[in-house]
Image (cartoon, rainbow, N blue to C red; front, side, top):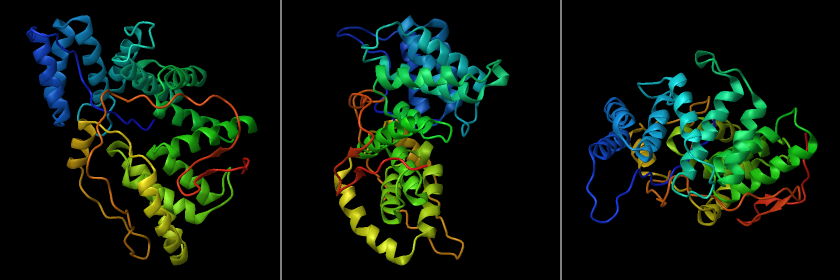
Length: 330
């Protein structure tokens, strides 16, 4: 499932002079508990909002409840309920993609539903529907400029079953996202460079880009991103590692850091620091993991406009980073 990078998440707001209703107070309690990782208390409070809150209150409560029920690492996993709530979010959203307050919540719900539809969800009677999953991702990517959706679409376009034209488009989008600082795209592209898949093999670039991805990985994506980097680091020669260090230093100042939410920052603080080792016992150098959050103003701060289909190559900045006239290799 997609990498999910969120900015400051806010629920229903108040106009000047208004007082909070019981449902709004329950929402505040639920959101505070969610941010603190106290899922039982959060679920109880937000479930009360579903019973007593206004339509606006219920919209935001559904989203947070769905997030908790879809979390495999949490104590209250219930994917059937999560699927139902994510569906309710997009059904109650209306047809206006320019609703900036609700839009990012809708796009994250579309991504979550696409993940369920890709594999199916027997417990909820949901059969696999890849075409519908891709449609949801396309909506989130194009209507809401969601980077995580764009990343998921790029991965779909880079499957062995995809046509060569789709492969080229996937590489184009992946390179754009990596240049924009998307950790998942950076890690995925690093692995392609390491294997020489779709691009010429480049161990130095793979190691440098993988390190940048690790240093900015969001908590829920850290395991797979570190797994990928560990494979590259342990397989890289001392010469490759030395060459990569200079590039890493430059790229730290060039690539933008991803926008994160207070929830993600709190989750990262709760995560234990785990050392990784190569087979010979060497410690994997994970670099300088970002410790200070970069907060935005709304959940899933919109990415730059979704890049329309065009050239199969992308020339980025970042010390020559980018797919420059490389074509796509199977």
